Amino acid sequence: MGLFYTFHFYLFGVIAIISAVAFVTRRSPVAAALWLVNTMFCLAALYVMMDAQFIGAIQVLVYAGAIMVVFLFVVMLLNLGHASDVTDIVGGKTKLAAGLVGLLLLAEVFVLWKDDGAPAPVPAQQELEPGVIDQVAAPLFREYLLAFEITSVLLLAAIVGAVVLAKRRVT
Amino acid sequence: MIQEALFFSAVLFIIGVIGVLTRRNAIIIFMCVELMLNAVNLSFVALSRLYGIAGQVFVIFVMTVAAAEAAVGLAIIISIFRHHENVDLRNINLMRG
Image 1 (spheres, rainbow over the protein chains, first blue to last red):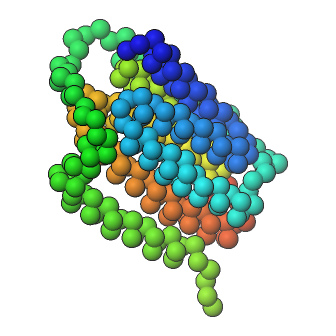
Image 2 (image 1 turned 45 degrees about the horizontal axis):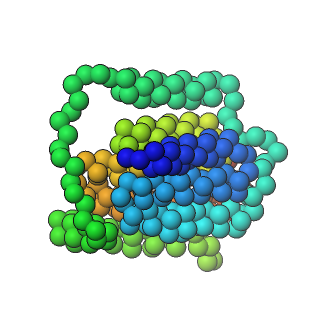
Image 3 (image 1 turned 90 degrees about the vertical axis):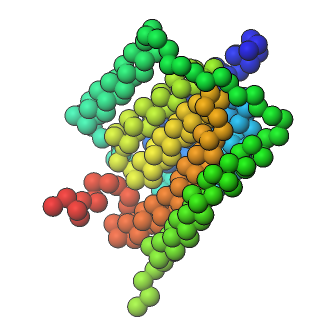
């Protein structure tokens, strides 16, 4: 791995984390959504750097494109774009509890990071072939064909559910 | 790079958990859940470099489920807004018992 690669890997990772922190601390839902889109773009860059180009493209199209647009659409539809007068951040005890949970999880990460025990046996890194999409598509339509078809049923159920839940009662 | 990617993934997941615990706006909590799903996807992609392409296939399934969840969840938020005129989670305590 060259220095160029390493530098950009860390750069995108750090930008992703900074954007995520900004996302959680913004009061206006629109600003929060835009910071989250920034995080997702950085994650797409990380996917591309880890030889998952197709996942990176899907990340930009589906997550940063479709899902976040739906979120912003709902924020605009319900006119929630402005930060409310009363802060929606919980106070006192709950915040303390959330901070403690965060510290606990971070401590866990650092323990795993510093763990010098015998490393798990790692299988040889598979040599990736030049084709990008067929590597993902071949297992998707062979081993995981049943799961793929069930996903389509899930999407149908989600569409019907969303329409039924969001439509106005006709009286 | 796999170790670093797993570290970034863990930190993003923690930020998502803290967001879910500390916010009351239902839409922001929803977006925090999306952030947690993204963090898990990063882990999947990083580990797929070691353990084969199945991780990337699973990321596609996670994204599909996330899209379905966003559609249904936002529809629920819209019907909650029709009822309460806001999306503050303090008002949603019908099932508290």
